View: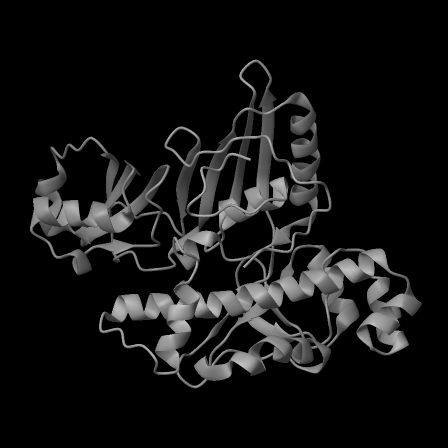
Length: 370
């Protein structure tokens, strides 16, 4: 689907971005320090032009361990240069002492008591270089970076979630309603999650649309457009931030903690503005906390028409509005390069941040030249 952007500036069209190992770098930030002793070998690895799965297959071949024996916190893209932490039982340590591969480098070996599991990371540090950037576009990019660093951004799922043809979510829905069978359990789970992601993105686009109404219209116009009561509209109009917090929203302690319902709007707004909490969106399923009140009504506009997954998957919550940490950028005019470094929470997409800053959609097929 085409995204609805938070940024209001005109699309920055002439720049060039290629997701290669020089211009796109991802460094995983572990959840905890490794103890230096224990049953599990911890490999700090750097790879390029390989998926995490492809790297693990190589590790499996040289060590004799099964792929399922390796632990990892998250899957990294094939494109670009990425570093991450991999665990394996220390029994296999000798297999990696003289390891050599043109696309993989073991940066360090350590030990720890536990196997690394999915989600065992604080986040990721990203480097992005955009080329062929004119000084006028560099100025626009600088303003957009400042705005994103100060206010945050909508945490959409990126195009990577939906496949080269963008139809993974349709396959996931077909599986849920019984029109398609998928015997591979991992692929089945991935396709269904793509359908959940599509519903999330639709919901988030709706909330961005509503927030844009409050940015652009007066109270009378908002009443006419939204059909909400005047007091609610006045209360939301007075909120200083772009993404409006609604009573009944499911919030979450940021960056770690638990989800909870927003009952006291004034108190939670202060915490949202302080980045102590954020607003979450519904990853459709039977066990996830549901929004209520006005927030729940908006959820239902998206989910009730697409509720085939509710009784077949657990569901979850995802940060809807995310914050960027330690955002740095610079323009190298003699090279016509604009470079960005920033940290995101786990599960967030750097390409979504880039799309927001450019006000343009990227996709799996594009050359990323505009």
